[in-house]
Image (cartoon, rainbow over all chains, first blue to last red; front, side, top):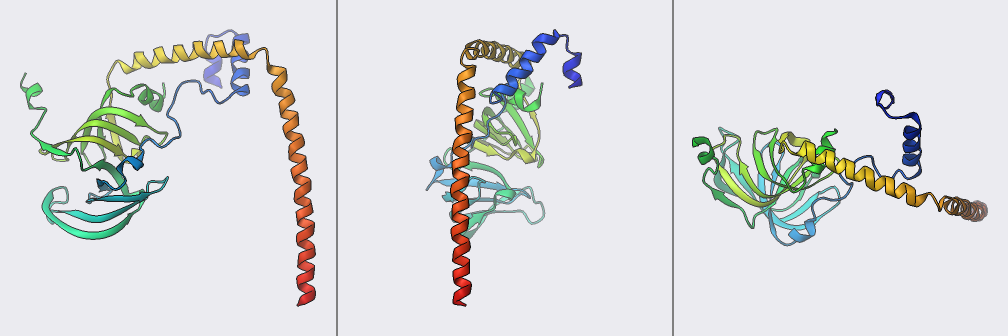
Amino acid sequence: MSAQQTQQQPQGQQQEQKQHRRRNNQTPKQEGPKREAILDLNKYKHQEIKVKFVGGRQITGVLKGFDQLMNLVLENVKEQLRDPEDDTVLTKETRDLGLVVVRCTSLLTISPVNGFEIIENPFVQPQEQ
Amino acid sequence: MLPLYLLTAAKNKPVLIELKTGETYQGDLVNLDPWMNLTLSNVIHTNTGADEFSKETEVYIRGMHIKYLRIPDEIMDYAKEQNLLNMEQRNKNVKRRGGDRNQSGGGGRDHRRGGRGGNRRFQGDRHYNNNHHYQQRDNE
C-alpha cells in the first residue's frame, strides 16, 4: 500500500487501476510463471531417464508412470554407485534396483539418457583469450 | 522487479544454474513455475569439482535445490519493455470492457438463483437419509 501511495501517479488514475484489477483479477500486474506442469513426462514414457536425488544418489531407469507431484515409477533401475571415500565422485559400478517408486520430495533433477554425452571442458578456450 | 517475473522474462535465453550441491547447469531456459522448478534445453552440466562435463538435451531442475541463477544483463530492460507492453494491452482491454458491464451483473444474479435450487435438493436428500437411519434403528 505505502509503496503505491509514494508513486507519483494522480489519485484518480490509481483508483481506476485498482478497481480494474479487482474486476478481472485474472490478469496479473506483470507476467509471472504459470501454475502449469512445465515438463511433460509423457514424452519420456517407456524411455530411459536419469534421475538425481537430494544427497547425491543417481539412478537410470525406464519411466513407467508418474503423477502431478512428479512421483515416478521406474523399471529396470540401475544406481550409479559413488566412491565410498568421496560422495561426489561417481564410479563406473552400478547396482540393480529393479522396479522403483521415486518419491517426489527427494528428487533433484530429471534428464533423458538419450542425448547425454560426456564432453571435454568447453570453457577452456574463453579463459585463455 | 520480482525475481520470478525477471526469470519469466528470461525464457529462451541462456542461463547458468548452480545447485546447492555445487553442480552447475548452463543452457537455454525453456520454462519455469512458481516454485522456481526449471526446464532447460541444450544443457552443459559441470560436476561439483568442475572437472567433468557433459551435454544433455533437456533437464528438469527442482527449484528448491537451486543456489543461484545467472541470467543475461539485458533481461532487466527486456522485462521492463514487456511490462510496458502488458500495460498497454490491459488499457485496451479496459476500454473494450466498459460497454458490457451491465450484462455480466445480470449473469451473476442468475448464477445465484441456480445455487439456491441446488440447496433445496440437498435438504431433500438429507431428509431421505434421516428416514433411512430411522428405518435402520427400527430393524435393530
